[in-house]
Image (cartoon, rainbow, N blue to C red):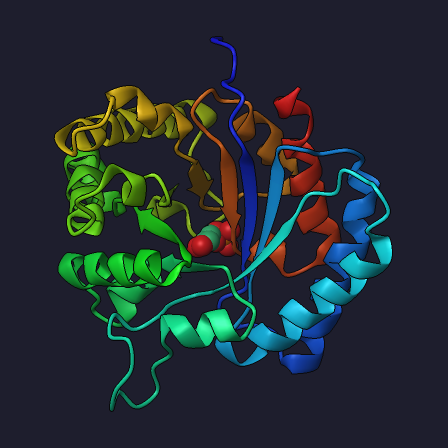
Length: 280
Ligand code: 13P
């Protein structure tokens, strides 16, 4: 197997619509305390994506533990983020949350274009692209999700679907510097919440394809296509402690976007631990 490039690695927990405020605080505290046991992890980043109402408390809980633990350890920094934003800066959009609100609550990142938002809330490609642009302009790191349904995979459409979603998601970013701020998450819809993860080889094949598409995107923005080697491409869909290591050891899999297994500190930290040895 080709050696893994020394990129950063990100293990992100998408808590979806789970956890009350107290539960969210407790989980954030447990993850932040527990990550001391990972040992030095200079290239690992951990992401917590709670429901919007808990974001500011989760950010505070994380910082409170980090401040106590700060003394010279190589702890993986923890990013806190939202699961969605509106593409406008502000306005009469009942029920929506803006990028600036996420930042002011202590968030640094946002999941965009998750398949549940595309399917349940009819988000389309162009809207996702506008949200990605808003996130980048505001200083939030977008995690742009792409992924095919089972019918699309069976119909041989995987690469055309993810290429379309990727292209639309980054369409408005005309500068290579903006493009380099986007994290991609490949989440095959058939693997989400089903217990049926993509095999490491299936994931690697799509990740390699996405990286080459990113190379073309950098080139079309006047940058060297090799810039795509720095991009983080996460895999999501039934990542668990027992399959994380094999998935994460693939050359183009730079981390994981974890749903169900991120709801307990113990299983989430085991997945984080699986990312540490792959960095050496
Ligand atoms: P599961 O890990 O529960 O399959 O969810 C994946 C996901 O949707 C993360 O965004």
